[in-house]
Structure formats: structure tokens, C-alpha cells
Length: 272
Image (cartoon, rainbow, N blue to C red; front, side):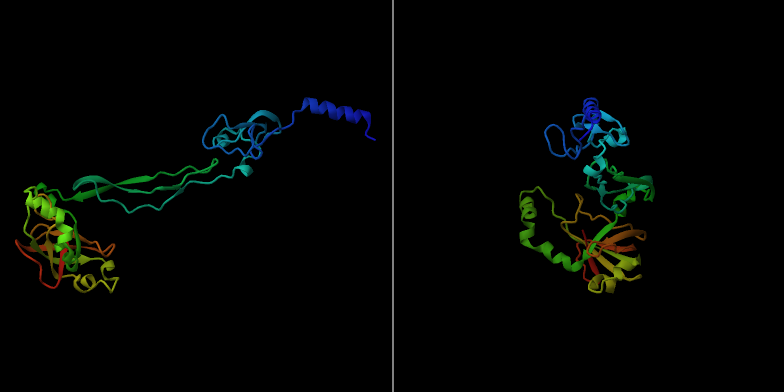
């Protein structure tokens, strides 16, 4: 038999000490687990707070409660934290200016946001200083990086089905046709990526230091003045990049240019 005094003490303690009616796991007044994102003052229930031996009228189950130290005691177990997940950094961009000091940047993107007081996303953008030396204003358009494809890719340029709109605009007099022209270069340097794939015979065979190559400028690579970006300056070094072979890049020197021309040297490429 339970002593009368003990029964009285238990009854009295129940009157004085409120029973925790809910927690993050058990939910609030509407039932179901409480795990709210961000700061939400309505994401609240009653119970014991983390690191507190005292019962509180309110304890929170939102993402900001960890900073305020007012989370319900079971918040971390009921609402496990998940950190933000981001992608790898992109490559650094080109310099923002052609002459002098500029900036280059790289970016990454959010794959998954943080949850339940997990680590917030780190910066998505980084910038660094860069320097460009193309400072002669008369040379700027020609000193852009030439983007190239092997000459075999030019076959599709003459496909009538791919030129319907261009031909239509020409017939209306709204587009000025330009003649193709050839630019001859002497290769002065290239990286190892140009020789890494034996299937790319145009690059692995012809892209050797000292080789004279021909790059053809034709539709649709023309700009508004009928020229191709990266045609270079006579006798001066400029840069090129292969579009079909990632990271294959190099330098060359323009040796000559021929108007109304089609490349036919055996070491031929097209501007893009």
C-alpha cells in the first residue's frame, strides 16, 4: 500500500510542475513534427529547452533557434541539420578589360540549401585582379582569341537548309553578304592538351610549333563588318583555342592574309 503522505506529495507535484505537452518530435497543437526553416516565431511548443533543466512556456523548433539558444531539447535529434551543398568552382573568366588592370571571376552554384540550422551556403562568387596588355586601340578587335574548328566542319556551312534565313534576308536586302578570306599563321606555341587525343588528327598532326596553318573566315563567323574575331595583326603574336578539343590552346603569328579565298593547304581551320 502506498503511504498516504507519498500520494499527497505526488498529487501536489503534479499541480506545481506542468507536464511537457509537446516537443519538436511530437509536434505542436496541430500534431506532426515541427521542423521549420529560417526564423519562425509561430514554430513553437512548450517544453524544456536545450541545456536547460527548467520547463519553459515556449521552446522553438525553427532554424534560428540554435543561434538564440531557445530550441526545444530534442531539436537536434528531431530535426537533424543538413549543410548547404554547392557545386565546384567554374574556370576563371577572362580579364574584364583588354588594356590595363581588370578583374576575373569564377562562380559556383547552390545544389541544395541548408536545413534545420545547418551550415549556410558559402559565397558563390570569387574575384581576382588581372592584367591585359592589348592597349593599342587600333588593334583591339583583331587581338581577340580566335576560336577554331577543323576545316572539315565547314562542310555544313554550305548546307542550304542551314542557310534558309540568311538567304532570305539577303534576298530582302537586309543582310550584306561577305566574301570568305584566308588568314595564314605560323604556330609559335601550344599546350599538351592538343596532342592528348590521337583521334583528332587535325590537331595532333598539324598543331606543331612552326607549322603554317590557314584559318578561313566565312559565314556565319563574320561580324557586322565582315571580319572574324582573332584574325590578328601582321607579324604579331595572338592567341587561339580549339573548340572541339577542350583546353587545347596556343599562340601564333599572322604571316599573311588573302581576300576572297578558301583555305586549301592541308593544315586548315575555320573561325567560329
